[in-house]
Image 1 (cartoon, rainbow, N blue to C red):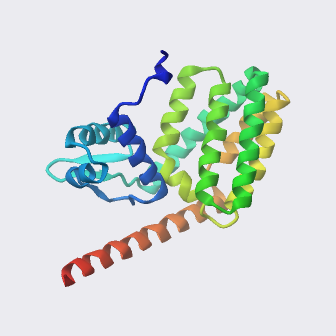
Image 2 (tube, helix red, strand yellow):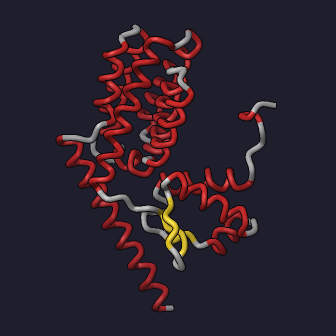
Image 3 (cartoon, helix red, strand yellow):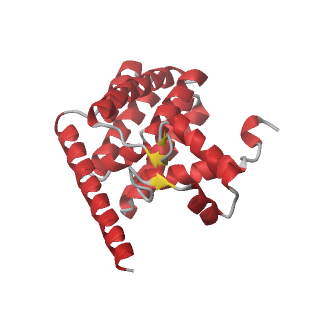
Length: 239
């Protein structure tokens, strides 16, 4: 049995479930992750919950505050921009290597993942597109045939997951993203290493109007979350 074939530990399954909740906004930025409530929700003891939260903290998605507990991490705009800059270069390197090293089988997987993104766009479901988009990018990471590089790209991609999902909420961003995917696929399949690198770098970078749209979306989401928290507090106080 290989490492990837082994059953996931309970803490790993919980971590993945919480990662999904953070990425989808079900657990908004700033939310306190109460171990007791999470244990009740998943029907487990607090031990695997604690292990999952430690792993999420290591990944940078959760912040452990002394005597206060664990919270979904909020990252400032300057730090986010720095992280996206690094992500853009990691993806560019993956694309450059993939254009040189991708196998025939991986080429078919890449094309299929692009078609899945097209289908998701047609469905009008942004969450479905996000999942298809994630598989598209991870296919490129693996096609680089550089294990360490793929690990670093996947790690930072996961850490930026809530924010990458927010990017897709900007008007027309999904359609533009899909168009950029087509250019990326064409460059990789035709073996144009530098073109693939440049396409991926521009695809990931937040700059110009895209930066303004991202900040506006982030601010709107933060405001909506604050209103929801205020409503919950008011409802609790009235009971």
